[in-house]
Image (cartoon, rainbow, N blue to C red; front, side):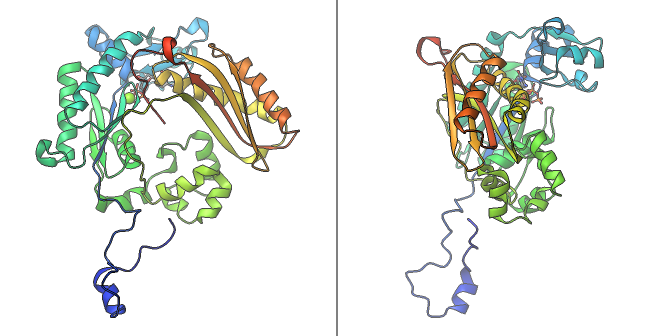
Length: 385
Ligand code: DCP
Ligand code: MG
């Protein structure tokens, strides 16, 4: 909300001496829930860590997990030795081998990664029942009001990480903060095998100095667009009115307005079943024609592919493409399908574009519908952002 918090406490009563008694000037507004304690845990180079755990001879050498270089494979992840060469997730394996010729690339073994993930979830459950998995190796935990470790979320995060190390054999990093956004940013801060706490009193200064590229949801493209608008740090975002952010970034603008102030009221949602995985992008300048949309599509497909793989490659049975036009009308075109084929997305996009009768496009999205019933993996699918 943009409304300023009402004047409260002693100032309130001094200025308004006749304030009726039934109005409590110090009552917190509904946007200010009691302080929460959220931990975001993220395992370090997850797939690669499992491989190194199961074959210690792989430790210390540059190691990646991913597809073979000769079949247009991509890197799912790599250990920190390989990262020193510039290798990273979603890079083509071919390119990774150019950067690091001695890189060993192993094929993924999802069954072992899923088993490790389940063991980690069991550890979380000893601390709280409020757990929201984001992917196989990442979860939010709400430990507000929990009494373990004398109620200290910092000590709980340490205990959780120690148990993951002792019982699963890999390291994890954690962020501890009063909300999900800050906890997620914090878990990345002292990676690998580290943690960081953001206390309520630190939020203001921490967020002001935070580069926008570190905000979850702001990808490379958006960060570049922001840079052109003179926005580098979250402090820069605060100079924009809420309506300006809305018109510039669509619905995400509303969220940006709050994130730039360190605000995030999202609950940790336990037991949600994810039904689809999708990515979308709102463009600074509307895409004027079909050719421009086609040009924008590969990047979206690549991001979607990475998201699906991060979720442990669940089965899916439908593909879709969403278009929002310059006049804010929107359409979604869907088709059944179990194969992740860029040509199918291109066809759906052409159909969607035709429905708009040639109107410029302000937002493009692609997604898959996750399979249910027989085809779905037996465990509940993780939710991720
Ligand atoms: N993953 C993938 N494709 C991507 C990104 C990730 O298949 N583009 C898989 C492999 C990772 C796992 O998901 O091991 C978890 O993703 P993270 O982003 O948490 O990356 P890591 O755990 O590997 O590394 P970090 O130490 O940076 O968390
Ligand atoms: Mg990780």
